[in-house]
Structures are given as C-alpha cells and as structure tokens.
Length: 422
Image 1 (cartoon, rainbow, N blue to C red):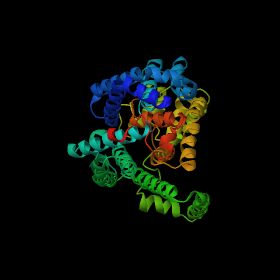
Image 2 (image 1 turned 90 degrees about the vertical axis):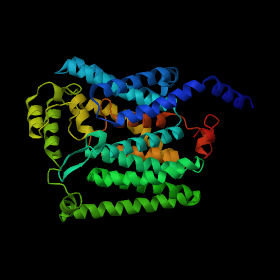
Image 3 (image 1 turned 90 degrees about the horizontal axis):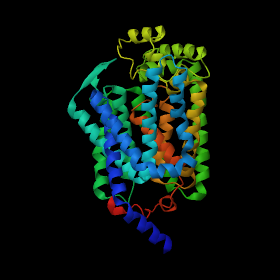
Image 4 (image 1 turned 135 degrees about the vertical axis):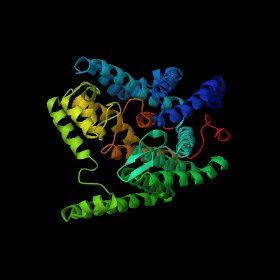
C-alpha cells in the first residue's frame, strides 16, 4: 500500500507535466514529419524540442547514468567544429543535431512507451491525411507522384510505413479504447495507399517487412512459452534457407532481375552507387575524425559541388550520401560511427531481448521499428538535424535503456497510465 500511495501521490503532484508533455510530444512529432514550411517550421520545431528538454530536464538529469551513451554522437559532432573544413556550418548543424537527439531522449523520459505509440499513431495519421489533402506532387523516375508536405516520395512512403506499423500496434491492444482501435482500420488503408502511390521500392519493402515482423511477434506471443524456442529455431532455419537461396540467385543473375523487374531500379540504384563511391573516397581522406559534421556538403568541396550539379540540386542542405553509416563516417570518421553504434546497438538489442523474453505488443512495435531503421539506414538517411526519424531513433534508444515496468511487461497497465486516459 505504501508504494501504491507513493505512485498516486506522484501522479497527483505532476498532472500538468504529463499532460503538457504529452500534448507537446504529439505536436512535435507532427511538425517533424514536414519538410515544407521553410525557416518558420524549423524555428517552431526547434522551440518544441527546447520546451521538451525543459520539461524533461529533472527526469533527464536522473537518467544520465544509464542514457549517457546517447549523448556521445551529438557531442562529437559539436567537437568536430575544431577540425571542420567549414566550422560555421558544422556549428550550426551539429547544434541542430544535438537538439534533435535530445528531443528524442526527452520523449522517452516524459512519455510512457504505450502512450508514445498512440501519440505517434495519431500524429502520423493526421499528417498523412494532410499530405493527401494537399495534393502536392514531385518528380520521380516514373513521373510526378504525391509527395505531400514531406517534399519527397521516399519520405511520404515512410510516413505510410510508420502509419501501418503504429496502426497494427494500436489495433491489437485490447486495453485501448474501442474508438482508437476502430480508427486503425482506415489508417491501414491510408498507410497502404501512401506506400503504393509513391512508388518507392524502399517504402514498399520496409512496410512489408515491418508488418510481417510485427505479425510474427504477435504469433510468438500467442505461442505457448514451451514452444517459443522451437518457433525461433524454425524461423532461423527458414531465414538461413532464404539467405542461401539469395546467394544462388545473385550468382545466377537473379539479383539483377529482382532489381530491374521488381524494384524498377537501374544498375546505379537511382544514383546511389555513385554517391557511395564518392563517400568511400572522402572517408579514405580522413578516416578517423572525418571532415567535420556536414562540412563535406557545405565547405565548397569540388566533389560535393560536382555531385550536386549532377542531380540538379542547388541547396546542399538535406542532401546526403543516401546511406546513414557512410554519411556519419564521412562527417565524423569511424569514431563517429562507433559512437552511433554505442548509442543504438545496446538499446536495440535490449528492446529485441525484452520482446523475446516477455512478449508485449508495445515492445514488439519498438523492436520492429528498431530493425527497420537499421535496415533502411543502409539506403537512406536516418540521422539528420531536425529530422523526425532521428528523434524516433533516439526515443527508441531511450526506451531501450530504461528499466521495463513490470506491470506493462505482464500485459497490464501501470498505475501511472490508467486505461481511461488512452
């Protein structure tokens, strides 16, 4: 009774913090999805992140002993000012990166994971509807396609993928209000529409993989504990068989056929191989420290200028090597890449381990999303200043490093998160 009274006292003592924090996180997630709005949007986004940090400051201070690895990459980006070929540009973008990363950590500190999934679902669904209503299109290999407020077909397809993932997570939660669960049905339709209409191969593959993994975890949870080990073994054998088949397919030209006929990609993967070749050369020049955060694109490097001109890009902001790991290594060297791994790998493994040891639909969503980010980062940018997916990655890391609530792990709501609130 003493612990219960303490929990209730804490809840009564900080209702405004939880309420305002929840509302602010929802608005922040909505804002960060958009790349359409110019400086005004950037300022609003930064202000939201700053207020989030202020609200979460007391909790963040207590979590430093466990969350310190999440601070290393943004700190290293700021330190890279001292050897950057464009110190002013590095200062600007590294501070934005730090604000973005800390915003994600603040979300994990302020909002319980179950509520976070609902907030992300609501913000993503609303943003998807606004994008469709905008009818804003952009160029693609197949002609003009819907890009909405994101300004990119790939980014809009990722909105669709995230909407599908969050809708599945909310839909299977029997303790949610029936209204929220009913809303997931049209959300799934909207998410699938965005993935298909944008004609993004990456979006289609990640959406299909995320749905398959989540459904697999649902089946895993429904399986008797004594049989789960056998289910994992069977899954591993099937995955190994697919890997072997893939090796033979590559040798027989099957990979080229898949790329050409299924993904509708040319041999350069829409120019990615050229970007990766230049990235490898840039990494070889300064492998340990890198060129300074974002300095390769902003310092007037001749290779960067040539690349930008080849793809008719006049503004280097937001442009990159279409590979998160190469981009980080160019900017911050193998040291920066190691710091990114130190922040993400332990946290993501803990998320996956918790889902396998004590399955839960919220943990399943977090683990699946972590896997999708790891895979998608090989062909696109995931860690960027003032970018929704950077925020989400660091929120996932924050949840991964936090101690799991026993009540939530058992499939029940904690005292701090009553069912009528969500």
